[in-house]
Amino acid sequence: MQDIIVPEIGENVTTGTVVNILVAVGDMVAEDDPVVEFETEKAVVEIPSPTAGRIAEILVKTGDDLKIGDVIARLDVDAAQGAAAEPSAASPESPSPRGAPPSAAASPAKAETSTGFSADQGRERPPAPNGARAGAEGEISPETRSAGPIPATPSVRRLARELGLNIHAVKGSGPGGRITHQDVKNHVKQLAAAHPPADVPAEGRSAAHTDLPDFSRWGKVEHVELTAVRRLTAESMSLSWRRIPQVTQFDRADITRLDAWLRQTAGALEQEGGRLTITAILLKVTALGLKQFPRFNASIDPQRQQLILKKYVHIGMAVATDRGLLVPVIRDADQRSLKDLSLAVAEAAAKARKKRLLPDDMQGGTFTVSNQGGIGGTQFTPIVYWPQAAILGVSRAAVEPRYIDDRWEPRTMLPLALSYDHRINDGADAARFLRWICAALEQPMHLFL
Image (cartoon, rainbow, N blue to C red; front, side, top):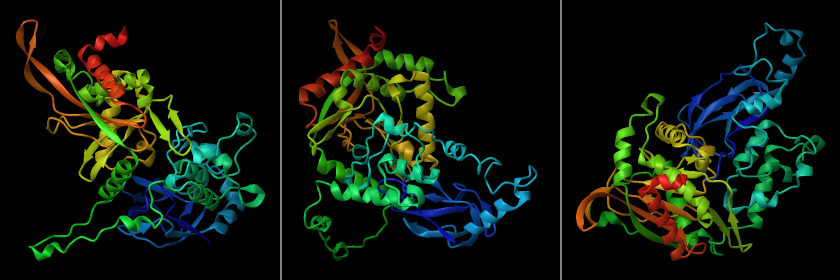
């Protein structure tokens, strides 16, 4: 028998809820076949079977709250081996294990590709838990990378990717050096122990805890549990505020011409499921600006006294949902057309509101844009999302009079706020970068010169 447990799904994800059970007792499953749908504070994910076998026992029901390591079901592994030995199992008419194509057992490479990853998609690694620098610890030479296949199952390789770990650096404890799930977890724990977070006091996190007064002494109160997304947001923002000395630079862009052009072309992409909006244009302009000002597309490593300049531009887009704020990442925003960005923005927002974002959809961002223009307000100071270097806040545009060429004219002005890590960039850098964005929005054709 082998237990199917809740794996480590992503950074800061420790609990979740079973929303759907995809198998029944007696079902045959192949390796990596989905067993349950599991909702975390970030997304709804499928938990796969670690190996082939027959479902012998299901220990959870829909609605159960589970934590990492809890047992979901028990698998009879011998049943799969017995089934493979039967001649009838190889016949074309024999049914495949639940959810697996006939060739799944014979083609593990295809099984991994079906999860949405390819062999070279591990370049963008999310930060490892508890401040561990998994990627830096696991760098290898091109010769080693091409020496041969990794002795690990697709589910183990996927777990390593989700934890931001270079699996080439993991030492396997299984037969023939095979890497197991536990090997990956132990390696991450070793890295975390070697690189503890700099902001944790010696006496532990409890040192920052302060008891609240009894508010009921002064009137009626109601206690409401924080949602999972709200808890994660609180932790993330507290971490960012402690680690980043941040300052906010303000400016305004005259988007009168841009606004008129948008009104003329607003419905151009509606038949394809998208719409050309100021958000898509902001993503494009900001992405091109980050190529001109690369220090805003960077991260600082204070322990190694290094600045990490990223050669790719993946922009996070803040989306307000009924569960809280989610930030899907639009990858390679600098290389996409406005049409492509418009469709990507619409798709990411829809997935966020329908709880269909995967952990990988919200990892790897190098910069963030938070557009509150649809809600209102004149200015706000967004918090930089660690370990990024900056975030752009956008408020509602307003028509106001401006004195141009000896006369007053009505102009549409867009308020912008750039919060940035003052360790990486100075005030003059921020002023120039934000002014570049404003100029690009005011004269967008200059981008093509």
